[in-house]
Image (cartoon, rainbow, N blue to C red; front, top):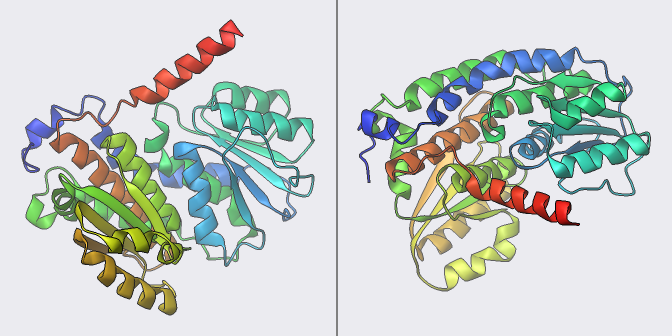
Length: 352
């Protein structure tokens, strides 16, 4: 293990500059939001907003679904498959969210939407999705190129929010406030800030040699906890458990509380606005499960509004995932298995 305050040693294992990508996240938000909110899409409120996306793109749909469920008059559904469900029709809006523009699953949905003449908007940095948008005269939100999808949350999420803002009550989103908060948090979590003053490093230290069990709460931190899981999978190359309150109190609580789980740490991601009943249930459940795991960490999102608190926790998880890789001499950037799988799929298609 490398000490978390050995800056040079940690940097030696970050040749892809994932730390630099983290630092740039707040700066992506404003321009992506403005680009999207001026994009011409059908003005009438759709019956459903159908977000098609995978991985680092799809999580933006989940975050928006959690954030806006009580303010957006139309439901948001996130599709993670190659075909649109039969219920999606001309009264809906399909948003094809693919950073690379070449995500096979999202392209399948995009082609289906075009064939069925469903109103569709593309959010992408290029690739086949952008080509199809130009060919079929679809609204397009262009994204800045050169990022890994999981490092482009500032582009993807704020572009989606910019599209949806036109149907929200005035003042629902305060992007400037959120970005300013994230800039302040970045300054306190960055590499040159020592462990004793750095929450991201402190949590990283608690998770070393542990199997994290990341628990969120539906609806406030559900998507954030999913983001934590994915970032720990990709950046730290770590196996992670994931579940959400109140659902986990009907299943996962049984196996965790049943027997000792040495080397497991629960990370509970919480929001001050979590419903009182669920918060009380969570307190009692964590007491029960806490008796059987190594430790329980409780992290509460900070900020004056829901968007800020949501991204406060999501951004913290990004930093922790990178630090967990670096302290173990793991380069956070490569995701070799994903590309190996794509190569094998392509080889099978050629043979077929």
